[in-house]
Length: 274
Image (cartoon, rainbow, N blue to C red; front, side, top):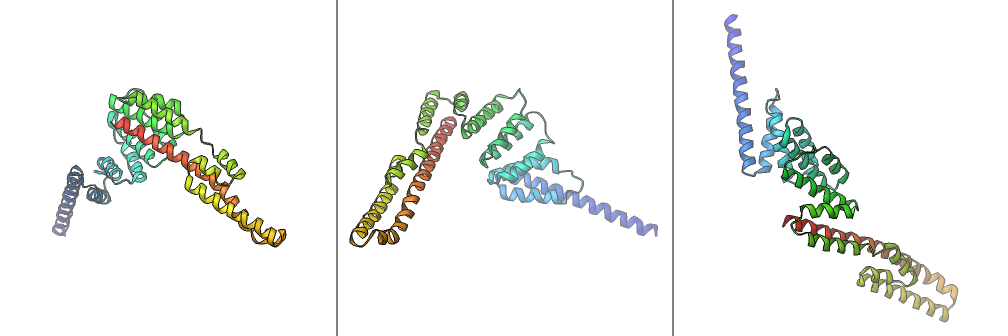
């Protein structure tokens, strides 16, 4: 009986050692893949390590690498989750780096409020590199939220050419001269005029020709037949294109503002990257 128990204990001990060794090998293999920038395969190896890690021996050591793999794969929401887990098992500069990476994940997701909250969690004293990144992210957040004067000051802090930043913010200010409501009113007065005002010549001509053509047909029908006949046969079509035209003019102006703002934003990012 004692011999049987002894044999069972030996088998269990050997099995546990073999399992631990296998888990360690998987962990090291994942690290090698990560260093070689094979992020998809590294991520799978890390997931396997976590799955079999009953005693949480490796978990705290893989969270950041998993987050980095996900970040590289543009899976920013899940990356932010693992950066959260990694944050609590690191300290000092490494913890600040994780916070900035998490803020970057939220920025790339377009969630500027969450990115701002992450930046608020940073300590007052940062390394030069971390401070520059925090300023850069703050510049992006304030621009995206319409705080252009504050954003301009922040971009100038991290840009090698402040004169270009000044020029781009002058360009950005001119975008505000385009008013969607004005585009709508102009197209109410003359179909297509709002689209011309917004810089969309093609849609402006289309609206003007369609509305003008239907108006001509309506007048002709009223003269040749009757006003009632024109109202019943032409007016519904005219009303449809006329109403659609001035609503579309407003939407086009809004889209043009976003497009031009996005272009300025990208040019600002290029200045900082240069």
